[in-house]
Length: 377
Image (cartoon, rainbow, N blue to C red):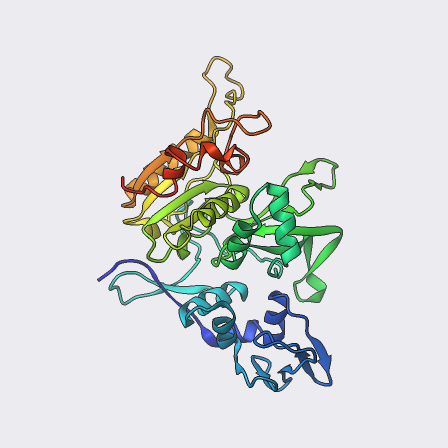
């Protein structure tokens, strides 16, 4: 019997927290009020006049008077995304911020995750997050252009619910029951996260920095624990894993794996920062996986207060730290260096996102291409 962690969900709690109308908005489907009900053009057949209805008396149910489609939010997700009930449960639980129950191996006991533990490196409680929605086509194109990636690769990450859209910064209004409210200077952002919703990172879609109250610039806002590796719980039965550092490199991984038609065989996992250890709660998901760490080649940094010591290489130190953890967890691990490569603009390649702007003759053949195919180690 497999010892891969299995997840279960509180279906009624998901329905309570995620009404059908809100799910439609998250999916980018415009709904308008019609009396006490809400209507929209049906997402399952072409029409000009809205016939898809969510009745006030059944807020978790939808019905189309045109094509006859009828179902709850789980039926809707399965039909729209061509997934099974398990996939729908996982995705909708994450959107509703409903924690899963986890069961490992043949153990009969179960406990809610995430949970507070006495171990410092265990996953913390999920952070409160504002509602996010799917990226629209024009936003996918804008993000791809910003990161110099293919729109198809970014679309694949969006389809996997690993990147979405949100207005940010926001704050929780205590006078409105904790509802999220955008600040006056909030702008459109791309957000990287995963189904666990243990951590999310927000960056401006126009490429500019956030300006803090004291005037200094902030490249990205992170909510939650950066120890949680994005995508760890969603690897499924794929034995091969690309582990990268940062949201941009996560998009680049989708870019290359889409290009090489490997997304069905290679899972993408991302750590949001190289200074953290991998959460102990995530390590069981890596057991018996073959993990290739696409190492960041950061410039060396001096040790603060110790000029006599040799400089440190943050990307290499992160790779060494994660290799030790994953190996102890039962994974086969290999690191891959991009050192020595040059971008088309003459700058050195520091990470996987930089590799996307290297002359394609360098990676269409040979060792670079093998990094996305050869996991026999």
